[in-house]
Structure formats: C-alpha cells, structure tokens
Length: 145
Image (cartoon, rainbow, N blue to C red; front, side, top):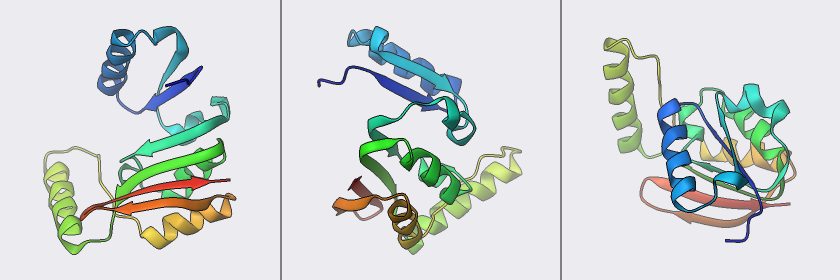
C-alpha cells in the first residue's frame, strides 16, 4: 500500500520462505529485503524505516529491553507491536508450553513481559502511544515520534 521498500527479519528459515512466497505472489519481491537471524544481532545492518512492526515477537524474546530498544531506534515515524497482556490464563498456557518444549529438548521459550515495562522501554526511545487496543489476550499498540 505505497511502501517503496521493506526489510523482513525473522529467526526461522521457514518463516522467511513463507514471507518470500507471499512477496512473490503479490509482486513485491524486488522491494523486500529478507534477513534471517536475531534482530538484535542484525540491528546494525538494518536501516531506519518510517514504520517498524513487531507482530507477536516481543513474547518470543528473553531480553525485551534489548529487542525494544534495537527495533524502536530504527522507527522514524511509527512503531507497531502486538504482544501478550498479563493474563494469568495466558501465563499458565505459556508456562505449560515452555515446560513441554523443555522436556522435548527444544530451547525456544515464550514470555509475558510486563506491559508497563514495554511501554516504558518505548518511551525511553522517544515514542509515545498513539493507539492502544486490547483483546482478551493481546495488546495491539501503535507508537509515534
């Protein structure tokens, strides 16, 4: 919808492949750069963008402060994020999932970072809330400079 270019960062090859297929389906392959890896580690090579989005990513990262600082520093105008609210039921489900993954030898973990801490980290980066929408489990937040 008018974007001249985009950078898509994801930690898994499968997600990158799906994103590439969708970009090709929509005819956007030439306008999207795909990077696989840890965003924080890749941040120095990721250019600033008018809009930065993290859709259900903050809950997959153990060091929320580091991820939010690295990603928010790249947002020139808008920063959008979807992350879990602090609901006891959701925390229980994630804890169970983490337990099952640990038993199976999978190192991946999910986290419910405090919403206030996420907001504070974004404010420290010079961003202010523009739109906050809560569902039962998720917060959909847009911040602006």
